[in-house]
Image (cartoon, rainbow, N blue to C red; front, side, top):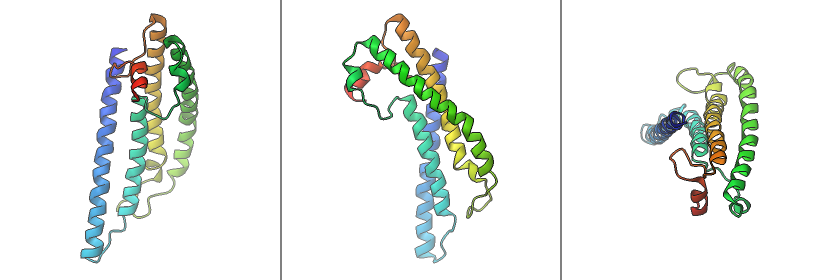
Length: 182
């Protein structure tokens, strides 16, 4: 489990780094667009499309990071009033539902990518299949979230067997973080 946890932490850092780099691309390309349009009088036709595609990737990478930090929106008023063991069982049930949804996405997205792969980007300097910007980010983040969910499910089962609270991938106990509002 320790190697799995460390691997997820490395993956999280990679996802954050890529998202930050894409954010820089968005800022610089839009700044370049302003200069080219209003100073040089010759707008760049590809900037809006490139910025949109970068933003899509940022959103899905952010969703994968959010899963690693268990920071997606959830209502915990009921579960926090329960004993730690009951919280773990309820969390495991939620993981089961998330796993089913991720499994369905992993099955469906390749078909969508095949269809989207037939059309190319409109205004980018080089023709790139649209699936790289619409379906591919969903598929990549779904794989990342599925790996994360597998880790958290195993960690929750182990914590239920041992009678200890489950921890995030950074080893912070989940129950304490929930009470603090993280």
